[in-house]
Image (cartoon, rainbow, N blue to C red):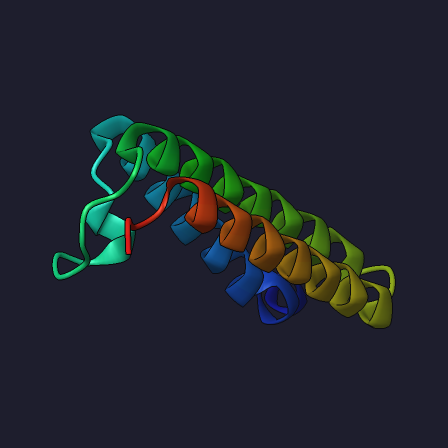
Length: 103
């Protein structure tokens, strides 16, 4: 059990945090949870929140997969999470261009 927590503790904590914020974002529909209060208005806040919550859940699942892969091969686990983070970055940029700020 100690070996499991040593290896998977931080990724599992990240998974829980991502799921918490995705569900909170989806339930409240409040984009200031992730954008802050000082940002300008969004083009379509409802779709922005929906897409952002989905992308956060995507990263949460990717983190869970990485946690499982850690027990099989560390290099594969790192490659998987790096690829997923790159995909997330691209998708987040597209979401922000489509539904983000008006400026």
